[in-house]
Length: 261
Length: 263
Image (cartoon, rainbow over all chains, first blue to last red; front, side, top):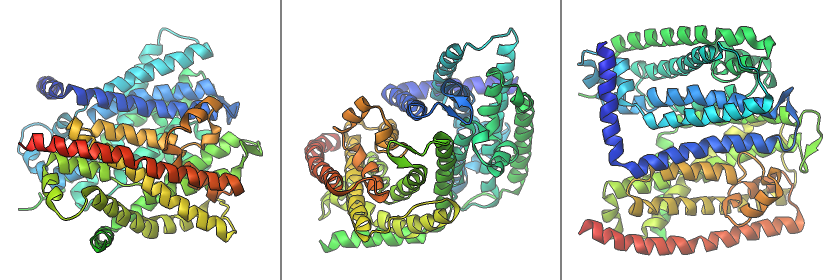
């Protein structure tokens, strides 16, 4: 309960600061939108020259992309910790965090919230709905439930991976560029994994399970039964990765010695 | 002139001091190229060629596009924005050089560093992993190098324009992000321009973006030959000159704007 009220207070403060710079918020939403459009244009142009991608057609690929955008947007809004090392470790902000009585990870994520990213989920939903109607996908009463479960799973996969990478900062305070690399690898999960070779498929499923954010769960709604097992693993993999990440984080905090003076 | 060359040297040495970051950079770019390699193989399927490019040329195109990006890519728009926000630009203007010229030289120092420590080793690494086709013709290499210099000039000019916009917008993080996305798409980094539908190609001709990535890549893959090649270089040259006009105009306006802010 305490954590919920904490969240509401932070969100309120956040809205106030953002509304001070309305033009900037608008430009940022616009540039996010542009970024999503670029990926969509890429798919459209590619399918101007081919009929299928390892047996997946254009609308199926667009559907996967639409689904991917939703957990990705939620992750972006609440776990925007890509500059954790620079902001909290190098500048010593972590010391301030640790003196406070809420869990350090929760506090860091609260401080780095970027709620305008949530607009990406709206575009994602629209894209998915469009592709879904083109494909004439069947709809069942339990789909919204499964969808919620898979979305949460996807967010937790993303959050887990990025929290683990952020935790590296506790052990080594040198700057690394692993974070942008992860964003790039994350993009792999948006395409059907059967186009990649076995090694990459294994990495995307069990080591950096980005395929659980896009392709696997989307395959369930595309009614591709051969992928159902993987699809239903989504929430389990999500929870597992997130728990491991929190454990690694907690160990890291114990290890942390503070920066500078 | 000496002081500008000194700028290039200083930035180069600065980059050298932080070079460990670049090893992971090579890995990032390789992963990107790898992703696109598999994606394009799937797109080609059993098709021999699409829009005049074979699979081999396409994977070479992707590899060269990303490695060339390391050379022309720079963050001077962000640097200019930061110096304007922090007010440091006022001091910079008092110094005995042209601020924008100096920024360009810093970008060049960074570009040369990345070319030597990033693109070249990266390209060798990539060539071992994926099948690529290098031009055997010495002239192609020379034209490619020339074209790459133009890429650098035009991309830097666009960055200068974005940076100067901070004078008018105060906070332009959003604009910088939007510019990066537009350049990635319309420069031909992600997709060769010839893959776009005809009407889109027609529109893109009137913008300088394809001079950044598409032209040098097409020269490198030897898809451009003879007259077409010369025309492409001319296109780059014309844009490099044309872009000086808005930069000069905005810079003059910006300096006036500065006085008001500082007053």
